[in-house]
Image 1 (cartoon, rainbow, N blue to C red):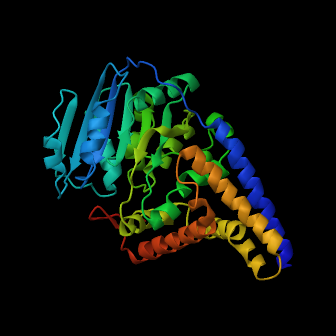
Image 2: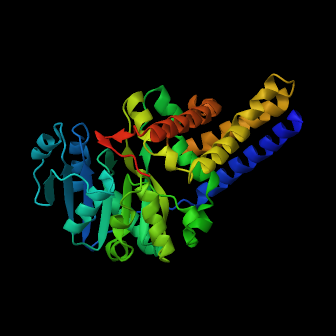
Image 3: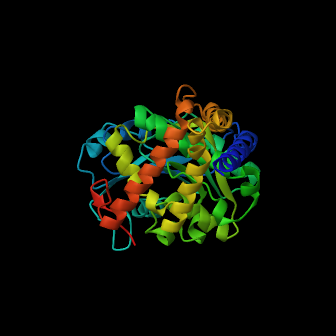
Length: 366
């Protein structure tokens, strides 16, 4: 019985790995061209003194854009964010200082993005996190992809900077997960919300389409505001998808283990549509990538090795595509999956206890 289950898990592992390798061919990447349309680059910032200067400077330095403006919302920061912004001088920069707390029913980031979008008048809205550093022509390249494929929203997935052991185990799973499970070619042509892949670190919308679906006001209480925003577009029949942002931008999300745990804990409880979805998804990942390893102790050594290599090879190919560390990190793929399961447990515990906070705000939502 155990041998049969290991065999089934091994087959699934290799099917997913082969899919991820083929799937990479359909990840959009376009060379940049001059963009003459008006563009608003919108950066919400709360307690981002370490990174805000670099993010804003890179945004202001975008090439091939003939008509753009950068808007930064200093969202009641209690650190040196405001001071850092005073060092940046540009005719293309507008800094909005806000002491307004999110109204009832709103989470902080959707409210900040909503306010920024209201402040801007442009054809394209670029939502950019403060820990993202754009390459010189990142926005021009992404808009070229929008125009070529007739998309109303694109999410260029940045290269993730992962320093420290826990970061190196967890962060590569971000791209690995959707490269392995989501058929990108079909998803780009489909309007199915279930196939939505987006990352709010760097996201570009057609402004008219954004407002037609209700913008961030329509998703004001969503922890995964990026994915839910794309789902709004898809439900309205408007095309949008993730694209390759590896060469366009970098993001250093978490600098400490505590930040990483808190960051994932704030949202994972909502990741799979409730506790039943969480149990099903995490059970599947554990069955496919962890369970076969018991073969090393039950005499199924060759089969267990084949299963293990399937996960490692899939992880390695994804790492190569996204320019993250390949070795030795890919060798620890089962550990990465186990840690991801643990982070989900932590997230659910904090949610049920009502103790989830982020940026000094309570973000528990029903």
